[in-house]
Image: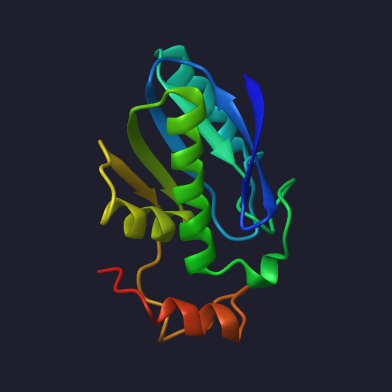
Amino acid sequence: MRRLTLMNKNERIVGILHEGDERCVIGAHGLQSSKESEKMKMLGERFSSEGISFFRFDFRGCGESDGDESRSTLSERISDLLAVMRFLRENEGMRRFSLVGSSFGGCVSLVVASSQEIEALVTLATPVRFEKRRVEGFNELYREDIRKYDLL
């Protein structure tokens, strides 16, 4: 395992690379979570034991990464995931990406997979409709931003 740091919009994103080959699964955590969740750690260990790289990271505003979680909207998290993919491609030689998104990280992964070349996509407990209920952790900025996306 190696700790990696990259920049997006002048803020640090911190992640852990479980090393394997040039195939890379990227783990996207949910709201009020981090790269240190038991789920993300287990996935990293499992994929790397099969020879597949796994990168788990903290979105900006979460865990060790810079930023303010109250501003970590869907758009900002999409930007982070795209920055992670670009960094891994340019600096670590990764060529094939798959995504595992948990909860709100699944929303991020769905949007990114719709516009990027992704080998596989797995979402876990991913909400796709937000308008009919209040979601803990969503401020008005989150609600306004998420209306820009069609997740279904």
